[in-house]
Length: 482
Ligand code: AMP
Ligand code: ZN
Image (tube, rainbow, N blue to C red; front, side, top):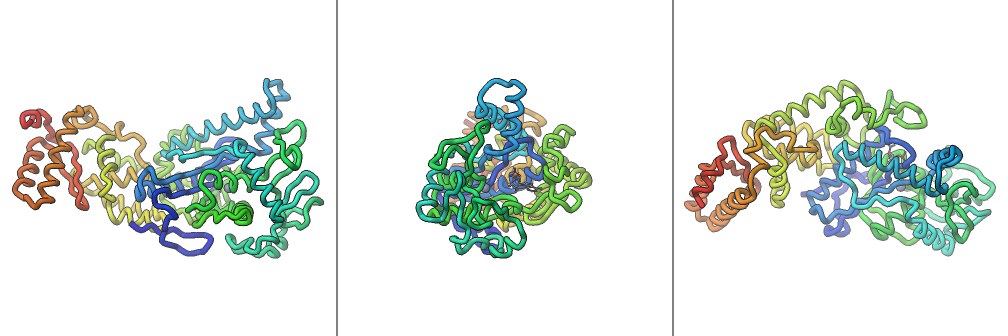
């Protein structure tokens, strides 16, 4: 299957070709952990979760490495820690900062888990990669791409000729746009901070430039390098990070001799009345607010995936209600046909089955999740468990069912099934596949009849076969056959 992805760096959709199909590597900028995630923060998490699932599906679950960081060097975290210290909380400022970060990371995990997102393979914290940052900054200074002044280390933006290429801006436009801060320790107003001094009462680390702390941009460059290598496949984040954060990441990493990311992907913003949802505008509500109001995580996920990731979107009550109705309808249909985790696992394990081609085609086309959901509407019209299997697979691929077992009506039909039954049916199915491969149609038909008598429904898709217990499934008949 071909996956095409829109690459912000080239402004084109490109066929995705991993550097190493055995280890497809993706880095996504994660949250600054000073407070609960708002709904906007959940958008990149969901978008890149769908991409992660698609990559795992395509290259194998063990052949994808997804890294998403936690930014735990931050003024707002420090402020909370300091306030707690002043209020008499025990521990050093570093310990109190750690405590605050642990607390918000715990909330983040709980909220994102509730949305059905898979945890990345690594979730590095900036504070655990200070040595790597110091090493990278030292190298940039040695190669003249950075300079120290008054305890600050700055990156010389004009030394990197391609600066601005990602977001399509020239350095002079950026200065004219006055999005840069003039400061006495800067040679040029465009230069950005790699390291800055820390005050005595705030967290700091020893470095060749005195006690201080890293700038935000160097964190991602150093962590991505350490965990994914000098060159990797995909770098993602919200489009609010394109400039300056991603431009700066690119400049630092390229000047340090790293190839860095090949494909850059950016999700558009979740909006409220046409404005980006953000803490600073105060127009936000948290994921937890919604969950506590009783909106299931799957419904939040469904609404988010109904809009393509490169389009701005609004959260509306109407969308919530429609998504809830559709999803509940689909789950009811599956419930009627007795789908369960074990059955879905079997569908998932069939490596030769790539799912419904139209559904997978939509996902592979730059994550066209609205198209994939439209296809699900069609797939949900089937009337048998066999016919619904592609839909169950599709829902699973989108992560829209967190617990298939909750769908179970009758335990006799599904996971309560004893292992020997599963083994015996699997073996019958294998024998049937071998017979078919040898063009021994008589034997293949005989085995199919045997399976029918037991009440097993066989699904043949793309040269592979799987099975589901049908409504008349009766394992005692299987016992009689053995
Ligand atoms: P932050 O904690 O603000 O650094 O943001 C964490 C992630 O959420 C980044 O990838 C941001 O681009 C993303 N993000 C922040 N606000 C929004 C929003 N309103 N819509 C979509 N993504 C957002
Ligand atoms: Zn980043």
